[in-house]
Length: 103
Image (spheres, helix red, strand yellow):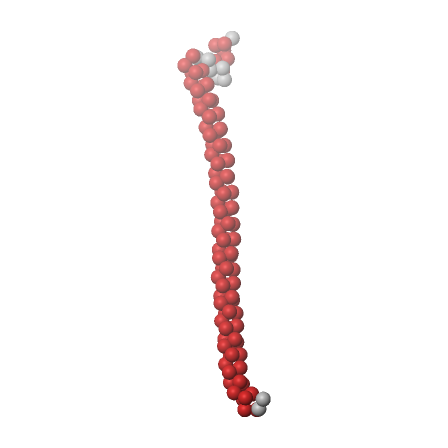
């Protein structure tokens, strides 16, 4: 092979290496952008899951508070009903007059 033949392949090889380098740069850039997008999505999903957990805990606390309120309300209603029955029937044993009447 003569030197002239080698010189003919050098520009072709240079273009090939340039094309490979450009393709590699494109793949690297695409990979970097994709990784950045995926990382952002993961961060958003993580943040959303933390917000959902916090909301779930608040809902559980509200349900507990509601159950306590219902119990307190039921007990208050029972006390009121008992007091009304005592007033209606004259059985107010808590007052001094009621104690005197029962004796």
